[in-house]
Image 1 (cartoon, rainbow, N blue to C red):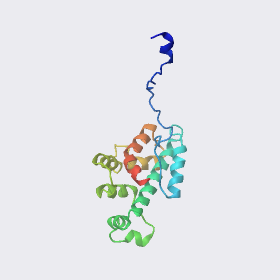
Image 2 (image 1 turned 90 degrees about the vertical axis):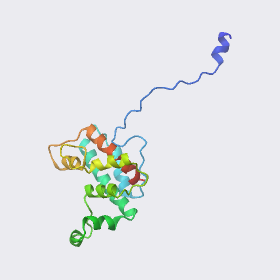
Image 3 (image 1 turned 180 degrees about the horizontal axis):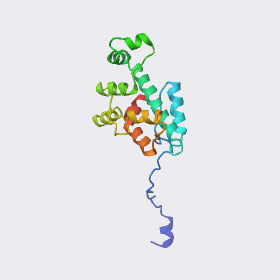
Image 4 (image 1 turned 90 degrees about the horizontal axis):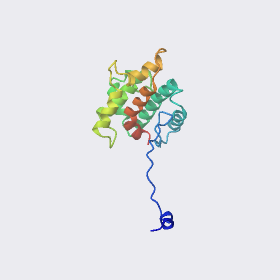
Length: 178
């Protein structure tokens, strides 16, 4: 084969070894919110616009808000409302005082995991979500951690803390945000 013939033959493209850079927000690239709820969509869009390295406090607080609102919306949409309310307010005292009362986020996560209300979630994914409801004070990547950086003026989450929280919650978020 001559040199000319060789230059005219098609070369196969070599795959480029490029590692996908992490999303600048806490929400991974390609993660989509398909909720029909306008507020959930608005919060998701706002969080996605936040640069985690520059806005760690806002990202943490808004992630907590997103999880709480989206989980309660999912519980209602899937018909679990009465069961959840009755589980945490058997005597109806809280609901009699406040008709709009809802359980705390830890309670909603615990109920959801204990009753396996997320279709298609694997045992390992349930374990991941369960860690969010852990009451281990030394374990920052939990609901208690969310509460600390939401209410304690001396605590600011790191980017790593926030990404770990997202990673633990992601199996649930994939289901409750669709």
